Image (cartoon, rainbow, N blue to C red; front, side):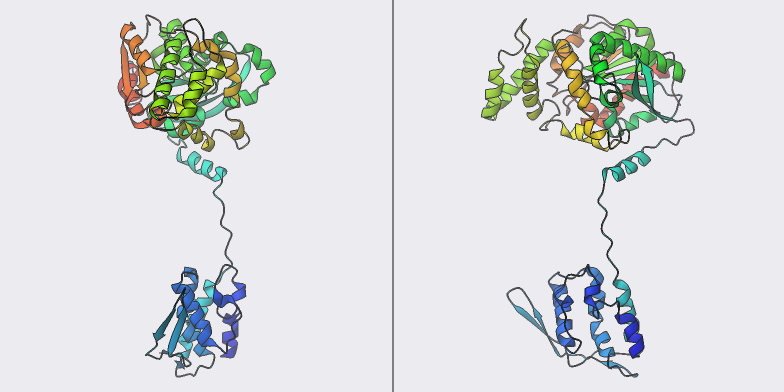
Length: 472
């Protein structure tokens, strides 16, 4: 019997507490076996005080039987003189009277000892939940496995340099939707796992990191690309990309969806190549940008005074008069205006800034761990070349020869949605639609993704369906 006890006791927390490194209990101190009353009191007391992990409780509960087994008899085991249990508490002691004497067959005591021993295992260090693990989960969840699906992430030669493009869709028979991101340099591919995953059921979605942006910026030498960073070149790149997509995917027409600063490119494409497009979809559309800037400043200043924000009031007053007629402000002033517009909910509605959107990019399966820290390097690079030109003009053309759909956030003060609505009333087109997102600012694809998808399917996809260019 002693030999059997020795076999199990080597791993038992009661017999060898120091072996179990994960156990933090007063009973892990050296309490001699000659004092079973004290040892048991300490363990049971620690349970009541929440100082023993659940995995050890079974050992403590059967401790009387195990301890009694040391001098056990074949017919049974008697708990050795534990009639009253004193449990030290925080500020008081608890006393329990043990009115019954536990008796179990000796063989049961040793079986229980074996179970207690099996609970004592080295605790494995808990793995931290890394970005790579999160990316693996997201990548697997969005993996396209449908027989007629397409999932490509590749470099394409556009405008004399390599540029990154993602092509994703559940069915190749669906129409192509090319996304032109804004910023300039504010790529949308990194957030697409969240915002546009469901679009892929109804469209073949093409996300493209344009010249000087995102993965494409990291792929090329900025010194060589810098001189090519012009508005004309961005349009020429879009023309090449659209031609390449139509050839690669066998489509006569596509949808072009542009966001924010990208709407300059989108609008130019709609003007120059209406026959290439089922429809042009503008999100956060730029119109009369000097007027938009002035209204954005007024929104921020009103909010600053209403909330008695002295710092905001001071900084906004310092850049006044903001975008006075014929006198656009330098980019430093623009960034100050943008800061307070964002803080007061004019970039993402009801939010302080746009981290709810940008932070999504950190979990993108389309960017490596090495690329993520430099995700927005291209944004800074591109802004200094073309942002001023984008803000200093009125882009509200009088007429377009292809269907036009605008998605507007009611709280958008980056590209002012009310300025857009005024232009929309004047715009002539074969078909036009203005869709309001009442709970969005400048990022409705992230702020109201459900309505965004429904609106694409309801207002855009029918143009392709009528020609048979859509999966049933």
